[in-house]
Image (cartoon, rainbow, N blue to C red; front, side, top):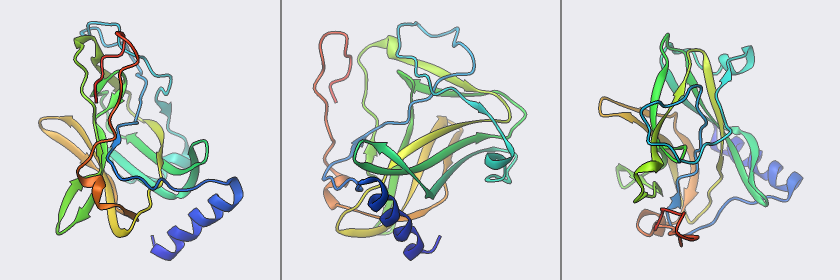
Length: 206
């Protein structure tokens, strides 16, 4: 997408809904939560179960992907509210294979993060927290011809760059999205957002 068109979409969204892009100076914690099409019978149990279950492909979503594989698609022109006051855009994970796909998760959080192309290499500007509780770790499943729909926050900063999302599936498969334009702050390459546990039942320190 032409960069000027991309910026125009977000200006319209912000004027319409009073939203702004996130201007932060740290790596954002992973936020892609996915429900499952089936139960993980091998998991210990006790993990957070998200309600964002896969949906059946319809004609509108199906036309986004011409691939017969599993595809991660960023649609920056599809403005959406990430959270109150924060502008976002749609991200789709589409399974057009003929198999049920199994993805690792922590409390329903996919191993999916944003990367920026900076100084001739791809670098993370988001991170995945690590749980000390084994019950947090499980798998989620998506059936053939299903898709997940997510909303990612729009970022803004001092450095203009191109971005993509990276999804770890297993040791043999990592999926990358299409690239898109945006901006970020340099400190997003180093410092993590961090997290303070909300009691003993919260197994995350970062």
